[in-house]
Length: 359
Ligand code: PLP
Image (cartoon, rainbow, N blue to C red):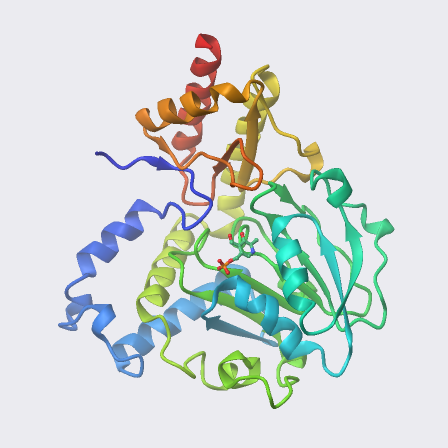
């Protein structure tokens, strides 16, 4: 079977050039006589890979010098706990915004460590919108304000950075990091699992401002302590070396594409034409208010759900894979991260039009 256009929400499609390079270097990385998988994380070869990878991320995101960049394990889910563990700093409350399934998970986990104050929620609107910033009720005594910049399941994305007053702003960027320009200096912490826009699963990028490093109480396990990980260059325990290497290849690829500014234009085009096709049809619909629609995850339903099975089976036959929606919301979801070529989106749109014509 040929490679398909893979619309998986994550782990998701990787740039073919990255996979080919990894394949080429699999047995013998740059004449080292070893696979990257076989290298000591303390050896000179891997150190060079790690340093280049980190520098490329700093360059792509223009991360200011007063931030630590960590590459951790445990996924974004571990950060749901590590954030309150690290930065409550003696406070008993944290402020959260609930815009979908992933905010809800972050809120639930934070509740183990502190009182969660809900600054805003779109739950009553079934997570099809984002509450206007001027209606947010942020508790000034909270240790930080947390939000999710792109809700992978509900297909809702922030196009602006919310204000957090004097509180550090903490953001789960798992599903839209590197897809659009961001001003890192607006944030206290940005975190993201790699398995959507940055590489395979297994690494979590955490970008944390210096004043939020070193606040963890002693009881916090060392590998969960930002300061200890920062001091050890994220090598307090053996890192996921091969995944760091693949992340590095994806970052190099992104630089070759012209960086984030260039890929953002592609993402605007890709998402724009898919939403346009959905809106113009009478078979497909997307429930999210236009201003808040995600450029990365495009959920849609068919007017007649009885056609879902046939739609998905025919899509597969046409080389369009992983289109079922998340089990909690049903319908379809096309995840169109950086690595999805525009031709993949065009092929999907053509397929959807043909399916509508014949059904
Ligand atoms: N946050 C968001 C926005 C996600 O999309 C996901 C996973 O899909 C997670 C958090 C959880 O990530 P992980 O499985 O890496 O813990």
